[in-house]
Amino acid sequence: YIRNSQINSFINNEDVLYLSNVTLNYTILNRKNLTIEKSIINSTINNNGNLTISDDTIFGENFQINGNGEININDTNKIIQYINTYNGNYTIENTTITTTKTNNGNLTIKNSNITSRINNQGKLTIQKSYINNIINNQGELIIDDDVTFGENFQINGNGEITINDTNK
Image 1 (tube, rainbow, N blue to C red):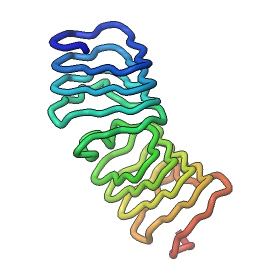
Image 2: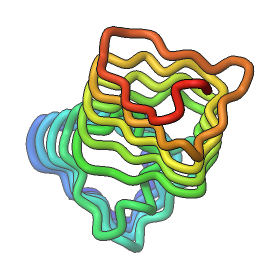
Image 3: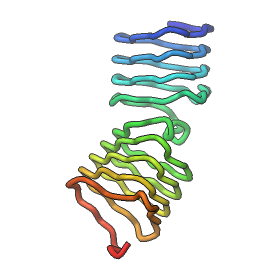
Image 4: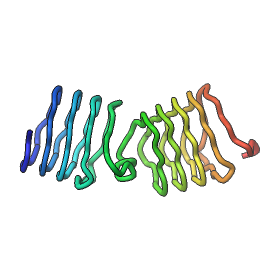
């Protein structure tokens, strides 16, 4: 249990760790159970375990979540843009995606600008968005007719593609 502290060095969590009212300025590797409440996160969490984040936690400018672990938070919209690998059911709305994302689950992107690569091994649905980068599709890709493509758009891979307007 760590509380009322600034964390400025690497933490390798292989058991149960509870952080309360901390400022996290350095990477955490979570392999078991990590709970964070009433804190500020200014670094990367490499999550390969079970991560629980309370609603009163603030995400700073250098915050991101990597790894294949489970994430528990009441409002997933609060962290969706900080996740790089999606393993569950997620919807991204009204966002500009500027970092590489990997989808292993069921991801829907709506009303967004995609300017970075997306690797899809799950089910990816894109609606009312602009795509100007590569989609590496090894899963199922569904592109609605209201999606606009930029000059750098392309689809690679051997996955299934569903699009009604094939003239695009």
